[in-house]
Amino acid sequence: MRIVGKLLATVLLLILEVAITMLVYTLLNLHALNVFGFLVRMSSTVLETMRSVLISAMPGQANAAYATLFGELGPKAILLLLIGLVVAAMLRGIVELTGLTGHR
View (cartoon, rainbow, N blue to C red):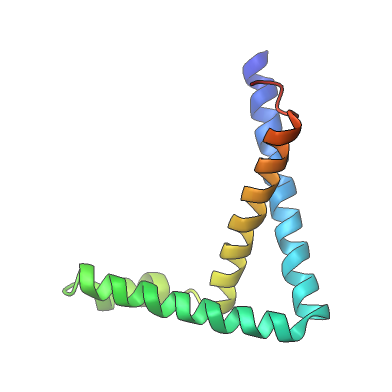
């Protein structure tokens, strides 16, 4: 029974993280367009950095990997992923600090 409760809590937390991530992304796009544009430009830099690392690490497979993996992801997709990571870290930190998970 304890495992089912943990699994349910994890699924609920994941759903909450996705919902908050989409809300933050949408609100940034609608109400803080300058900030959103700046973050998209920074995400483009992150994407180019990932490409450079890939070329350095795997020069032979870099073009194929870039075309299949990073070529599909644009700066806005990377921004959404990064916002999701930040939201998840913050939400999980809040859950841990408040003791809502029930374990210590």
